[in-house]
Image 1 (cartoon, rainbow over the protein chains, first blue to last red):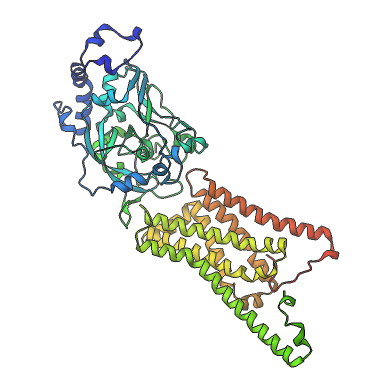
Image 2: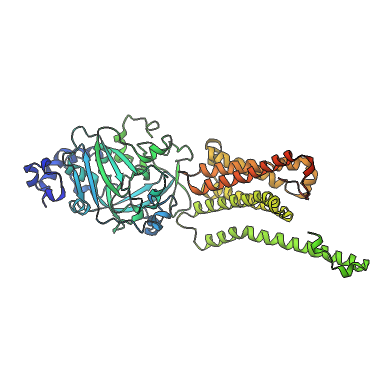
Length: 311
Length: 239
């Protein structure tokens, strides 16, 4: 497939070389520089670790949370603040057609149709723990692709240090957005190295089913070592920036929700403890793990950082 | 009220019959009161019974302990609001008989508040009382909720008629603490949410109206002077 089918950008920004460059060779070139380097750092593996052996990254053999629970117990304030609101009140939400605007500090900016983006990448099945900031957790088999694969196609410039995300704003379809519960649209952000981490997914499905509206259809972020609110849903905009982008819960209550929001049992939410969590479907609380149990893969991203101050 | 239940005119001519009619009347009133109190208890405890049924039929949703905590807390607030509605309603409509059910409603609120705290402490935290102590000490919204429960406990323990007799006027003063409970509970409910949700604000507003109505009443009473002293006296002092 030709890259110009994926990347629809204004004529003046299109250089002939890029038009004729096939995606395969494009990706191979990018992988040699970035993908290999990040993967080897994250995994402590050699330079040879390409895309293939990343498909099983971070897998867990823990019992999966019931599909019913994953799709009916959600925090998606665009549809209301009750856990049942996203499944009950998202019937009017239209996710076809869908496109994502990618811009900022990238070489290939533009607005891309979702199916063209998705068709470029191998769909992975990754089973991750999800830890909500409210101290409950689930185990979810996601389907999606690594965010880094997309970023490598659009090529962040040398100045890019952060990735900003934005959820769709459609109050006529999203009843929660008709009220000022939170400042809309919902925005989130990652540091570029967090975004490039092979654990970080753009998910389009779970349990091998397309995402339901309640779970952030048609495409959402999944960052398993951070509290759930970082994993922004129904994404329409991805912007590479030099400065740390705003994030909605941090704007709403800066002393309660930080930009990093790494799962950390030692840093409590001001109003409740983060030391333990209830796994949905279990009776007893279990201990919360540092970085939600993904410390061996992500701890080096935060080396030397004060994680109490940068909560 | 009593006049309405008086024996028919015919019986009054014969004192013996009148006395026995009054006796029958008194017994009927007593029986009615007992039945009505039982009925109110049945009504008050229905949500708890329904919740127990839901627990054993697996109808508490995805996060049952959270559902139990929220549901019992919600009913505690609803019944507390009903308790505080008795006096304004009595003054507004002249339904003096309502006051008879006020203490019972207050006890109902205490029961649900105790279930709410108990489920949190024993089911949610899993009997780890050190976590409970830490929560109460360090997390203001839990401190506030726990304080409200302690005050309700004091009011529940002194809710008997014997306590009322023993404490006399001080009983009224003591039981005005329920106003403080209303404030603490409103704060606890609002503070427990991640965002400003509708229901906690509605309840806080309702409590504000109920407490303000009392302030307005006593202010008007004071301004009106001694000529218009409250005409109705009741077995329980106004709260």
